[in-house]
Amino acid sequence: MNCINHNAVPLAFETDVLIIGAGSAGCSAALAAKATGADKVTLIERAGFPGGISTQALDTFYGFFTPGDNPKKVAGGIGNQVVDALDAAGAVFLRPNTYGAGTGVNYNPERLKLVWDQLLGDAGVQTLLHTNLVDVVQVQGRINSVVVFGKQGFVRIKARVFIDASGDADFCHFAGIGYETAGQNEPVQTMTTTFRMSNVDLDRYQEAGGKKMLMQKMEQAVESRTHALPRKAGSIHKMNAEGCISTVAVRVAGYSGLDAADLTKAEQDGRRQAFIYEDFLRDCVPGFETSNIIGLSSSIGVRESRRVYGHYRLTREDCLSKAEFEDKVLLCGAPIEDHRESSDGEEETHWAYVPDGGVYEVPYRCFLPRDNEQTLVCGRCFSATHDAHASCRSMAQTMAMGHACGTAAALALKLGSLLPELPVAQLQDTLRHQGAVLEAPAHRAATGPDDWNLNHS
Image 1 (cartoon, rainbow, N blue to C red):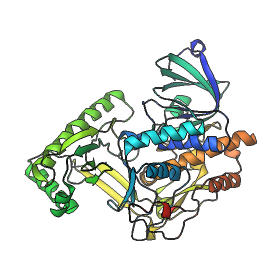
Image 2 (tube, helix red, strand yellow):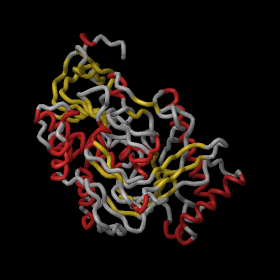
Image 3 (cartoon, rainbow, N blue to C red):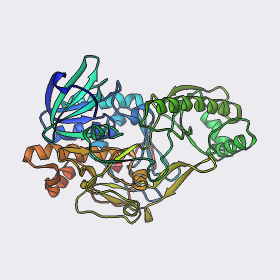
Image 4 (cartoon, rainbow, N blue to C red):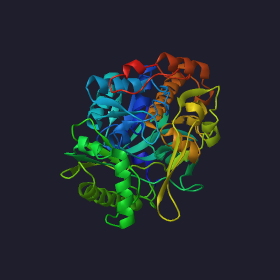
């Protein structure tokens, strides 16, 4: 707990549902809570724009489709609304499997900021950007309110239900709700600074061999030490802007995502590596001779930090056995994609696939902290082991998590039910009515840039 005199902090307002963190999970939770009938829904975010990693660092949604030659669309609901809005603006296309992760939904991240703004505004969500959570106030063993800090100073916000979508489980940390810190039991996944480059001749790049050629060039550069690349693998892909590419190549290891000093060093290391890649691409890769970095992720991508202990913890065995649960609220078919650093300093990405292009179910209990009845968690701080987290952290799934949690929060208020005692069948029926996918659909093609609407379940 912070050393704050809560009695001296003025109460700004009261709300029904308070969501901490406006990433893909938090935004989806806010939209779902309003769609399910919650009157006052408030979403707070420390950045100046919504979207979290979806707008800070990345430009592709994974997890909507299973990987392989017979893809299935396994996420919908709020996620469909987001992609449809991007599609209406001409700011989205589908791209083939990358490292077997499944068809990606590539989008313009700047347009996505506006899409989230518009969806939240149209729904009537009260959104507070530039707002930092600094403490949780408890009265007689119950969470009463939170203390936040913004340009106006310290204020309190009182709520009836709280949803931690902060990514780092910051709310749960301040509330004394139990969690596992990444790295305690298994190696923590590495961090990534993404970067974007303009003036790339993609035709020339493909004619020279594309991805296969790039991997060969990277390996040669590492072995010959002509460029101090941190790894021999990585990916580049075209963007929604002509002649521009985006990357997932930088590898930053050895820092904690929960310490400001460590994060500072990680950010600096990520930027340094990005410009090493710029030199390498311009010097060695056909089509990049006159290209330049035009943007870095606004903050480094942290893959894992805290994972809350819920009423159930999703496991590796659940993922790989295509587990089924009576209280399922979403599906996932994404492989376990574990980015780690090996003992010799070279990164290894470990993959494990759901057999036969199948899916597993994720239960509602994964979003219920075992230590509190007023709180839900969604996004990458949900209840899962390291391996299961490495599969279920795709943004289509985090949007589905938010959808489930926002719907559950509103239903619990409407029914006067405690969150753990919410009738799951009613939650599931509501989610289905709102377009969520809870049953694995039959095969649907997902190969072209214009067939998203054909793939809606």
